[in-house]
Amino acid sequence: MKLVIISGRSGSGKSTALQALEDVGFYCIDNLPAKLLPDLINHMLDDDAQLTRIAACIDARNLSSNLEKLPDIWRQFKQHPQISVELLYLDASHETLLKRYSSTRRRHPMAELISNLPDSIEYEHTLLAPIADLADLRIDTTRLSIYELRDTIKLRVADRKEQSLSLQFESFGFKHGVPMDVDMVFDMRILPNPYWVAELRKFTGLDQPVIDFLSQEDDVTEMIKDIRQYLDKWLPHFMQNNRSYITVGIGCTGGQHRSVYVAEQLGNHFKTHMNNVNIRHRELH
Image 1 (tube, rainbow, N blue to C red):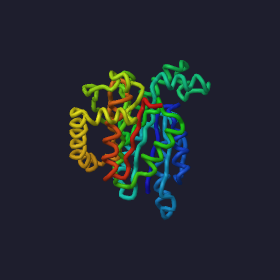
Image 2 (image 1 turned 135 degrees about the horizontal axis):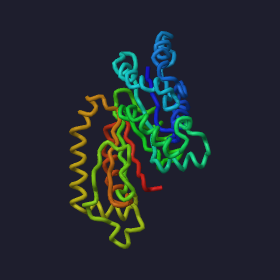
Image 3 (image 1 turned 90 degrees about the horizontal axis):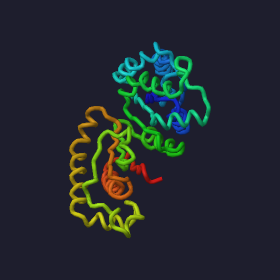
């Protein structure tokens, strides 16, 4: 049985994630009290495992006494021989969550404890921190549309084969901040910058003029080779340590040229021998 536990701050897209899994055949449960999860799963296992893929959303709408039990429950499931469990944590920047709640005028789950919306959002972050620390996969939805989030869930979670690693290369611009959901970061700002070539500035790392420029630079080729060799060596160790997801951040100044090109080169290399590799360019929207 495959069990996906979805958690995260309110407004981060948990309902969208749950719907995306339901669309591909998961039996989905929203706002399940954490303490009921073991009995529910055991009952389903006793029922001849007719339901083989289950997703449950457990978040701050739980009573705090229930929520505190989730880390121990997650650890128990990790040791269960009949269950493959993953904890998916969604989040977004404080400012983004504030805008989303202000625009929808929905009542925040923490409103009964804290009437001020910014403080409610921050308190929820503190409350869920122990769960976030356990996450197998963290997704920052700050810059993701509903459709992009749905695609990410389907590609990285639903389509991932058992015992395989989901690998994502994410380009970004340091001037816009480092993504919250990356596991490791490589800095491309020391490489030759097409931005300073006037005729290349309007293009991105996906366009042939920039590709031709960067592919002829020895430093760029060496950087890609070194990162590739590092990942070739160490990704098997991550897998042996039961890691199911790795997100590699590739950053340059603006996230338009160098990081995009390098992320594409690395992603296309690993697609040749891995079955779940995704490339995302955060600043290209």
